[in-house]
Image (cartoon, rainbow, N blue to C red; front, side, top):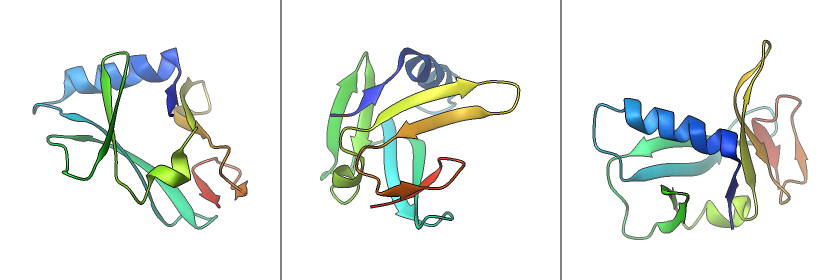
Length: 107
């Protein structure tokens, strides 16, 4: 189960409305990189891959590949908009550690 806070839902809806192409869903990915070894990624996708795990949250379709799903299961995604930081914040109970910025983690 993945949770999007109301602020994250609003932000994603805004990005979908602003997209110039049709959107099949919001892809969540984990890839190598960042100061802790793994980093989160998000992008709007035009189509779903055959092996994607698909979840609907308040009308937003999340797409997650099979390799990423175990690393972000039970994650909560929030959207922060302050004077010093604007962007998505991940609260991941699967992470053994994370960097100070919260954009990368280890499992």
